[in-house]
Length: 160
Image 1 (cartoon, rainbow, N blue to C red):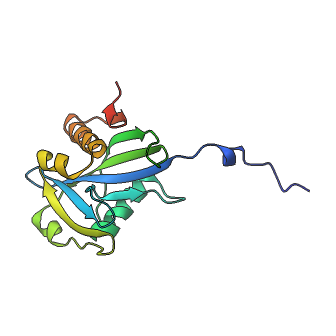
Image 2 (image 1 turned 90 degrees about the vertical axis):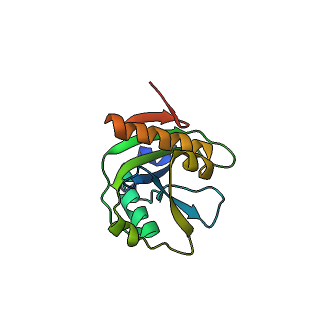
């Protein structure tokens, strides 16, 4: 005997999702973290867990990666990323993590099993440390922070 109507959404396609924070200092340098498991640097953030919102994931990941309880600001970018090189397609978002002062910066504590280090990076340094896709996404997030809009991207390129 059936227990109730079947959830038709159970068989719909799934997408990988991740959320991060764009955090800067007073000189507009971007906070990047250096993972132990890959060569390219990242912004603080990571995968969204089951039952977790994108916003909650960004805050949780920041706490886990930096040891800081930051509140996130507005949504800066949403980026749809096509499947490639053994990765499924995904939706990546960046929220405004605000500006850290010296006191907050001094409280950063990294999980040594996950991160080797962190650094403030100006835009040219950021382009050298992160992969091309994330570099495009960060550049668009900086524009969104300045113009007060949220930007929709596909593969790091703004769709108008």
